[in-house]
Amino acid sequence: MVGMSDDSGTADILALRQTPDAIELRHLRAFIAVAEELNFGRAAGRLYLSQPALSRQIRALERLVGCDLLRRSTHRVELTLAGEALLDRARALLADLDAALATTRSVGGELIGRVNRLWAPLIEEVLEGAGELGAMRAAYERMLAQAVIPDELAVLPLTAGGVPALQVSADASAVPSVLHLHGGGLVLGSAYGYRALAGAVADSVGSGVLVPDYRLAPEHPFPAALDDARNAYLWLLDQGVPPSDLIVSGDSGGGGLVVSLMLQLRELGIPLPAGVALLCPGLDLAGLLDGSSPLLASGNGETLAKVAGWYVGDHRVDDPLISPLQADLRGLPPILIQAGTGDPIAHDAGLLAARAEEYGVEVTMELYPVDTHIFQLFWSFLPEARQALAKVGEFTARVRGDEARRTAGS
Image 1 (cartoon, one colour):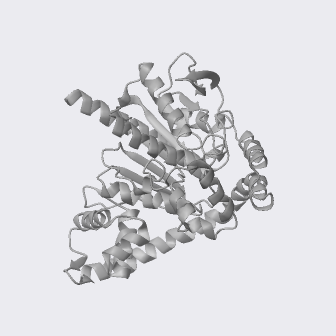
Image 2 (tube, helix red, strand yellow):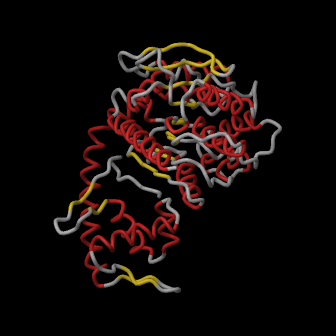
Image 3 (cartoon, helix red, strand yellow):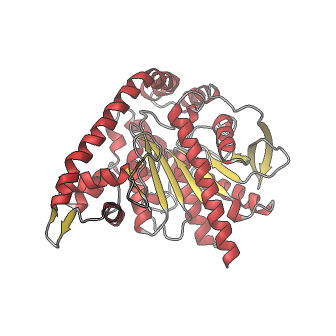
């Protein structure tokens, strides 16, 4: 099921004394969207949900309040008297919440300013350096080097299935059970640069993280990165890590690579992991190359298109392993997607969540009120990043438990 978290990134709940369950803010947001649009299709698009997911949220709300809020027919949607009574009160409640968050954000503006200052040198290289690859790589590594590694974690180099990698864990003797594919648009980044985020993930999930130094484009275009990711995954299986314990995570372009890896593992008949966590994933390479991506309207759109072309190389861009937004996603494991509301590529995350829902994949999408990309990198001082990583830990515990119960019952 697609689950939209509220603006705080946490599962705020409104308790009702006389109901056995609870009404979540996402139920109210869904109801208000349908009430204002009087059209499920338009409301679903506004919320980045599929229509079936939106319908389920409305039905859940009606069940919890104990009456019909909407009249639905083939041609129209109308509010009932009960729906009209709820609408104004729900709007007022969410308006109060938004006002509280606005006040909080004004206080937190200093933190986002700090994040933006960390990103600034890379953005300057992209915009003013005309996307010169060496300068972009150096700027990205300098930015990553300022992220904080959690205390008492060991960082060990190793080779995983022929792929250079780093293991980040509290117990150096234990085989990692999380595979993280780092971001950087598949042309930037390194396992070394991503020690801090890998450490934060390891802290959150309570197990070691393996970060492969997969090959980068343009020197190594598709499918080099995917081959390396698959070999690292197979190495973890060879070390005795059961698929029911494995989690595969990825951020930015690495998030898109994670989805491509899942599709390839499925086609090869290789056991899939218990779950997938995507942190601000970048997925729409096809849109960058065919001109349909909204990112092209940004100041660095030309460079982003060039970067996408470096990775795709001479391969056809409509290959599902390159463009997972166009793929058949059925059979994939549960997916957690996190994005910032001000992140330019949050659009990609919403499209993936809707498509996964269409194919019957269990997917939860969480939006956090931050105006930056890969905000989880800044966990040491950004509250939303800590909240998001805690959610990754909760997701990991849940899907591992679910998989263990399914295995025991089979």
